[in-house]
Length: 341
Length: 119
Image (tube, rainbow over all chains, first blue to last red; front, top):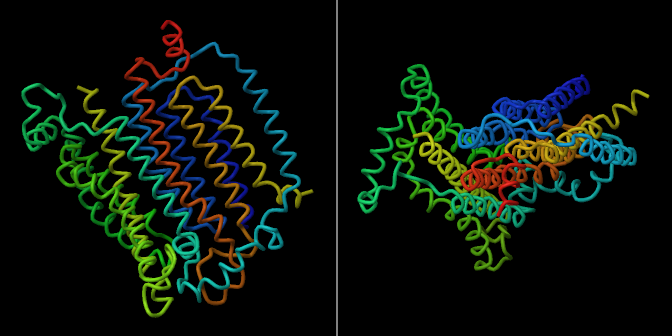
């Protein structure tokens, strides 16, 4: 039965991807990509990767789609027809694909417990982590403790991506940087923006529903953040979900109102704060006589030390991911406002 | 015959998706569509890793009573972080597209290449 679900979902995924090639309407392409992400999240659930499914559903189907729509608003909606030679890419793709299919025949069969991948470090993680780290969720144990160094690196990559987006686009607070107004306080600029950009406030249903579900989304984000040690979830997912709540608010009530709730200045501090919190825990471990990110020394009992360390670094990850996602959204949306005038 | 198909079905779909994404990247003229292609390619790699981590009769790697086999948690960790890094780098790519649009007035590859040739 599980195989059948897998078979059908993967087939649907292939059909969705194939359709992207032939569509020229980019709005439809982006929507199909949202469906594609959501289907792959479903596949991850059927392949037992619940944490990954969680992330893909919130990131791929949520944030990515919003960002791509934001880009479409700034560029064009249709792809132009060209006289490209289409046989050459097709030839390259078929040759590469054929070689890869030939290569898969040497792979060990799918889902066989005797595959080499399951006999390297995985048994150690599965058998020892509940005692060594003391958490039921092995993915969190590996992510935050065994491979904590790796995760720190990834948090830094997310941080630098935000630096990249902000230096390429920046967040525009005013519609028009007029000569005389440039020195005035931010408040007038924000009021200006929120008046000129009503968002989707005219739609009463959207407004009421958004007000109803935003607190629930935030509550859920906090649950995911702090329950990630025991069930699926953690800092990465929680950060994205929390950002989604504020993105929804800014979409419905206008970006100016969004700025008043979480101002870009606050985000500017939050983004590095999360990374520093993570690295700070590592340094604290060193100061207490252990190695970098060796949480065992944080408390008298090693397992308690692991708990403290993991809660702190997951919080760091959550804060950085939240601030980065919201920063990126602000950067894209504030451009749209300017072009739209 | 059926068992061979079931043994390799996931990998074949992964190759198909990867090649679809690759084709979109090299044949599409519009930069936003190219980014969608890159993301399809990327997701196929995710599915490849997660497929390798699956154990038959296994369950999600969260400790529970009465469970004998768990799927491999390591690929899950690698891919979980890769997804978030992936959206962050996609955002950088999209903001480059916005800048290209501002500089050349177009995001169609041949159009801004023509403008470059004129200079």
